View: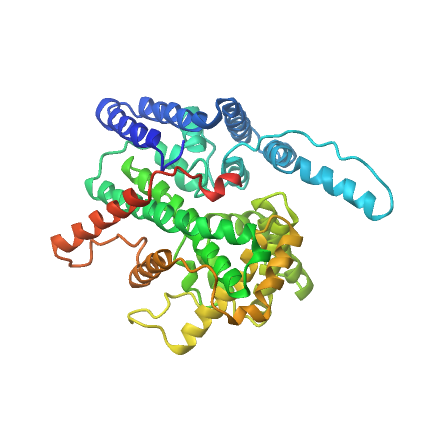
Length: 478
């Protein structure tokens, strides 16, 4: 079920009314209802894959119970390995089987041999990369004794399947979200209103910015050989905003919906295109995944400890694995490695934590130095996005070759004026509110009522005007 669909517009009010006005008195019943509602939400896409969520939930719940029974290190480690093998095994089979089969066959061809890859017609379950990491966070944290294992199976199933963030995150940590199912929730009008605002902004991002940009991005990338370098550059800039507006739009909607039901989810994006270097960008982009890899992969590998070689190795591992997490294609691996190369000089020069504050804080405009940093970071990010968007490595290199040609200095042969105007307004709105959790967090701004509601109605009008095409969110494929 899509957030931008008619079905969801009907589903959400029904679930909200039953949750708050019928089932509020009994916490366990309320949590059980969330499990059922979440399974309906996910099963609307393909009910057969509900068995995977159930299986993953049962395994990690049982592993947690096992941790509560055993203190012996060997047995606890065996339980953790079981959780990792089951979750990564499911993810690996559904997402990476064909990739490894084809890569294995290609390696034989490279050395003069021949083998036919045994491809399987596998459908990738929506959201599997997200909920497997979420359940793994529980098992790992309980193993490390940073979280008490739960015996409340209903709360645990609700934690794994919580519908707002089930399909595309944020990837919640068990220690943040799971305890919220243990306590009775009361309706908070202020939280609900702010949630509605964030949902509105998320829908605007998806429908007005991302989907409109996608129309031109799809045309330019599909026919890149027919376009000038300036048009190809415009295409990748539009894609940069498409993927940002699409993915952060989903996160905004998810966080807003969770607030309607009395839950607080972690922030997933913090205006990343205003970053002054690539290290700051990765602190602000897909925060739930970046911090997941930091805590469960980078630090266990040794993090920033050890000699220079170990540090460089760990950086490349985390970026390449992050790229591979996004999809079974060499383009994602190159995308991850390229970002590691961007990050490495900052790390070696110990400048990777230079920008921990908000850019141009307390000012309307950035300094020339800040502007240069923002522009440079955005440009190299766009170059990396070419690999992320391309169908294969040949497509990516051909696209880049087309950009860096003499036709780069000509006028684009595609110039979507309306989309660019909307994009400019979007950038201005985000810049003016870069110190907030989301653009429509207007409580501390003294705006006349007519202006405030004028903003809301304008966004609703634009969403309605450009809506109607129920396109999937980009990260559904991951």
